[in-house]
Image (cartoon, rainbow, N blue to C red; front, top):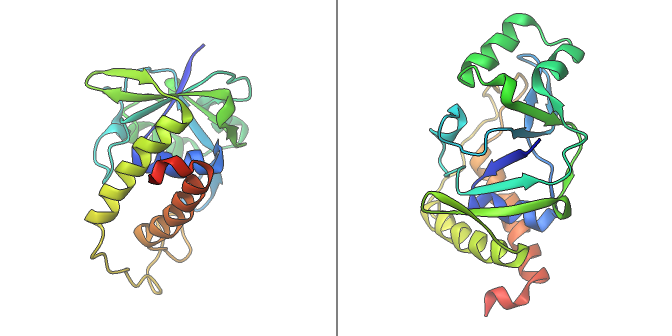
Length: 193
């Protein structure tokens, strides 16, 4: 079985810097969220609901998981975690009824157990980690330029979607991506030449 994790070039900066896939929300109720890695058996992003409506293009990068033995099919994991039927159905509907294609691992996935592929036209082409980092840094710089005048949102009184105090997701991403960019440049000094 082949499993794939899709992401944007801008997010690839953090993935390569961390050396792993490790950040993903697995909402098991309206107020409880696990951290985990989502993957799909669908090699092409077009039929998937998540592929549309984001600030970044999450179809730019396809990460093929070479050893997906710790992933659990989402419907089975949802049962094991006692996800309420109405919540499961709401998530399934939001995902265009594709739950049978989704798999989750509640542990980080080391990047060395993956193959990075970047979309070129309608094809995905394998790239080395360093070339992936180079492309990711270019995309990161472009996104940072678009966000140059971003003013953080005051969320001190806002309610988060999953309960608790809402965080400004753009401000959090800007902070994390600056750290990730610095780690990439340290690891691959040739990228800044």
